[in-house]
Image (cartoon, rainbow, N blue to C red; front, side, top):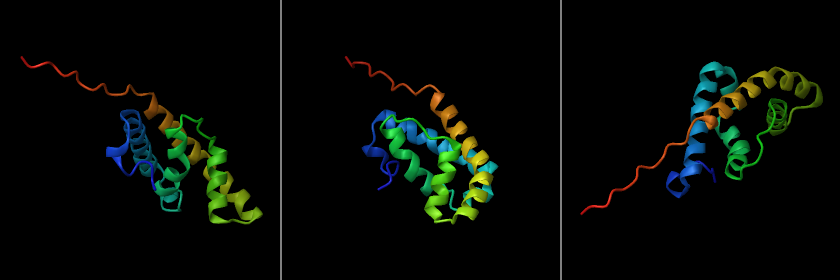
Length: 116
């Protein structure tokens, strides 16, 4: 199950992180449509990143993320080295976009005023 797929079941902090992820992915897709169309896409990234965000774990490096993608595709050593080197800059940019989105202030829920 995708950790971002049921917004009603998420805490406000998790919803904020899910929105940050969506925002970062939308910018990534605009910048790198060829990678988004090469299975370095939203489902792959959600699978790899969502649980890290949910559990407050450290995000990977671009190289690690590119390596996970190559493992996911089952690339042989020669192909793996080539494609990981090609993807790493874009993967690093996605992580940069995500970190920037996560640094934005979280929206504060409005205070309820007592009626009287």
